Length: 494
Ligand code: XUL
Image 1 (cartoon, rainbow, N blue to C red):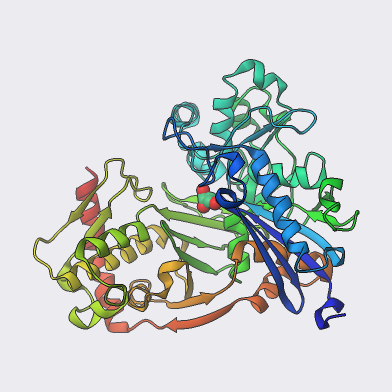
Image 2 (cartoon, rainbow, N blue to C red; image 1 turned 30 degrees about the vertical axis):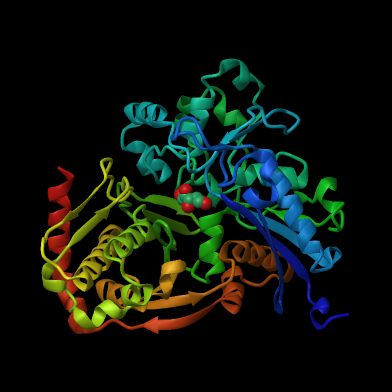
């Protein structure tokens, strides 16, 4: 018996766009992680990037059975690393949103399910907006949003014959939970908040919006249950892999709600900036804020709190374009530019809208600068300062945060993190956490087994690698620049 075999073991799954991760956690720490790439390991589903390519670029859909095969293979691989018969609880997190319509037997009615990357429901969003106006945002936490389950259901219901066969309308999370337990699973507050269907305050389906969205939708939606609810036990298909029959399965959540938990920031006041292809700001609040912005989304966390999320499409995408255009090496881009420039950069601003932007909404891409002459170092600073100012501007309505955790590929760049500390006038903490989403799910499962508080548990498994404190003089300069940034954006949106 190994030292850790004495501790209860749990499994957290992360079924994301391109891969599946299965993480085995015990009180002594992460024991093993297995991963499956849809493109590499399951080429038969023809979705190398998580969706079937070709055709209308607005349509992004995948065969739901690919996610199940990925889950099965990841658990099989995990079983090669740890003894799955020790597992006492399983749960998971999936890519948020999406729509999987299943029949009475739990089988998908449509061969392909739209995922969060799908933007083919503009017509449905416009119809929902025309009927309810701002009330959708005020009641569900988000304006009608293309990638959300509700507008996707409205589009699916246009095929009346197929719609009549639909018994259940699941987002990806509740579909996978259903498959894992072999029955129709409920949905958690976190996943239900990404559908344009749940009242963000009462935590119930909004009957009026659901009734308008699609015929009999309310009857087809799964029940909404509180965090950490047990939804069933592992179905034979999965217990055959080595899990004991009877192992409880907790309600699944979404990847963003579980990642804030995995990063140890799910308590009110916690905030994270994730620097990926797109940059995402998200935070945990105890209650819905009075005003929650026009472009952001207000979700629930997997522990039941509130989670505003603001997404900037031109994140590393823009940073990489500017770096390539200027032919700069990574070291210069990540910090070398600082010695040749000053905070505030002579007021230079750059709106790096290389691709259509989500926040603020910009349909016609194009980079806009308020300067013509600049050295490469000044161009880099103009980009990074403007990106940080954009994050500050659009997250400001959620309050001031004393500390913000930063994660993702570009978080290695000290220069950018120093700018962020000064723009937010907050301590920036570079987080050191492995597989935050799967870890967040596993932490919920472990909390079910041990009775410990999930947020306190997750603090044990993630740490801060480096901190960046704000410099009051530079913070003052950026406070002044915020107004200039706002005016420059307004000028370019008209
Ligand atoms: C959030 C969103 C994405 C997906 C990706 O609203 O659509 O972050 O959850 O997995």
